[in-house]
Amino acid sequence: MVATHVADDYGADGGLALGQWLPGGRASALFAVLAGVSLALMTGRRTPVAGRERWARSAGLAARALLVATVGLLLGEVDSGLAVILTYYGLLFLLGIAFVGLRAPALFVLAAAWTVLAPVLSQVLRPELPPRQFDSPSFGQLADPGQLLSELAFTGYYPVVPWLAYLLVGLGVGRLDLSRRSVHLVLAAAGAVLAVAATVASRVLVGRPGVAGRLMDDLGRPGGADELARATESGMYGNTPTAGGWEWLLVVAPHSSTPFDLAQTIGSALLVIGVALLAVGLLGDFARRVVAILFGAGTMTLTLYSLHVVLRTERLWPPDDGAFVPHALVLLAIGTGFVALGWRGPLERVMGAASDRVRRLVSR
Image (cartoon, rainbow, N blue to C red; front, side, top):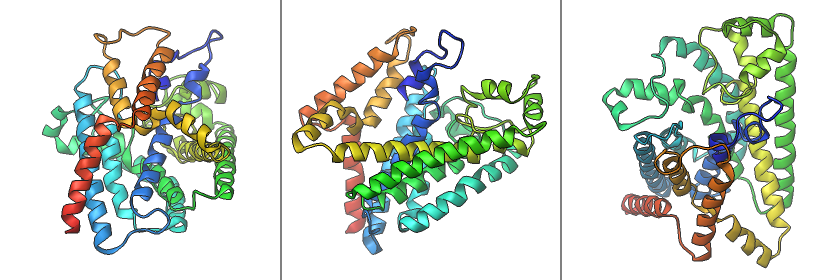
């Protein structure tokens, strides 16, 4: 996600740079899928919690979600120039609580249906909703809750209703037996197949006579499939144009929230998770500890993402063309130091304490 914010947009040949193409749309999707995995791990892993314990843990998750959303609103007040994801993320967590009682098969079936149906619902509703007004939700938008909810659910950069597909997939993954190497292999293989199949299918459908030309007309430019690919390769800021036709749902482009975009990025997320689990499974205890320390930033993503947003303000870190490596090194170094010392991230500690407190109160 840092790369999408600070890496060079285009290479020397004029094409989209690898540092933008590779994580573009995929990094934030992985962020959301891992949110679902986290929900599953916190609500019973393979066997969902039930009864009073489910109510208690759900209350704790709701407290966590509200705090994450609040941090997002605070960061929306910072002049970073970024579209902050955390308020969307908080609402996504809240919606996910309704599904924590399901097991893996039901979650995967529901995720597949949601991947197809939610973009259709969005295409129907968005023309009737007010247009997006802000890049990032902030406290000022609380004065107009209808507008804020509209942006969070459908018209914003990370629309929660289509993005619920990511969370459902992550919940399903977290309900699997993640100690088994066969599961790791299936996740990696299924993810690769899904990502490639979605990309190929989209290109075939968009390549039919006249389809790409009509979509380019919606963008006010002439051209065909190649021009459409170049026009959308850097992302569509959350959604396809509302003035266009249903053929926009055939496009696979970063942050377009179409069925093919959701399928491709779900596939890439599963591939990353499967490969990471396979890699860790091959390590011995000492090597695993070394890797855990080197990549300690992964244990405090909320803190480091928030720090990254603050660092993007001009007073703290003026923008420059070579910012990715120093940004990444700063965040990795902080994560390494915290894990080596046995510390939790500051925001993670606050969220965890508040969630545990609410869970214990409800449990009693």
